[in-house]
Length: 298
Ligand code: GLU
Image (cartoon, rainbow, N blue to C red; front, side):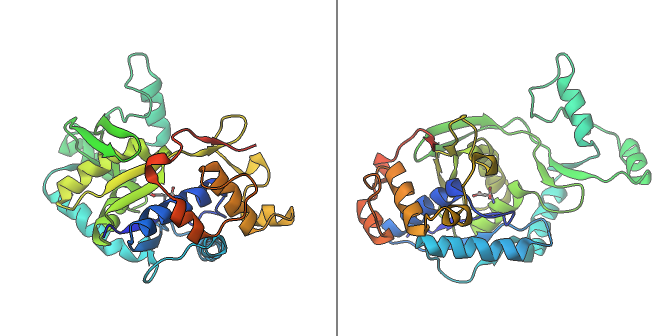
């Protein structure tokens, strides 16, 4: 039995794209007779986390999705994340990085600079003396992985093999909060998650997550990255695309059942406008026949 999960960040209401990913994650797990977990990725303490979490749970339930066991919150797992960070630090696999976002942007924009989005390595070879000076000046330090350019291949269930070089990814942010890429690896492994189903916007992070799991001696899950939902402008679905949350749609007279139908039709699991229950979707679900292109939602 391969445990599945949905792991939203409580930053706002789930939109149709998030709900579609949640439904798929649930279908992958439940159609295999597996457990399905809900994990709230609340690494960042925001005042409205609890309210957003409550809303997200309500929306998932309205769609007909259920989950097993207690909901895990990443914020409760801080000690474990820090222990994993300390283990990497002790092995000399990390270094402090004092760069601000602006400095990274400027270095990356320089002629012959590194590939956009890749950390230019400014702090990688600082001497002890230079590091001490930065700390003495009170500059906050993030913690980065000291990668060796390892090239990692993962085999995505929907996308096939994906190969990328591991970069000096941030493991702890400069405000002391463990970074998503570290926490997600530790939490999935500790919760026994065997298959991660999530949006394919995260596909490019997956090889580095696989590498982190290897370094930490944790089991790698398998992955199925599902296509995103985009607006007619080709951009990832967002508020500006109009009615995208269950609350917005309810105001237009379209309840959760109608949204489930719409999502099911987009997945080829129902005819347009056909009412369906999650039980019917389970019977019809076949991972091999999922659309591989983004869903353009008008
Ligand atoms: N918390 C992440 C998000 O809401 C998802 C992480 C994951 O599924 O690995 O985008």
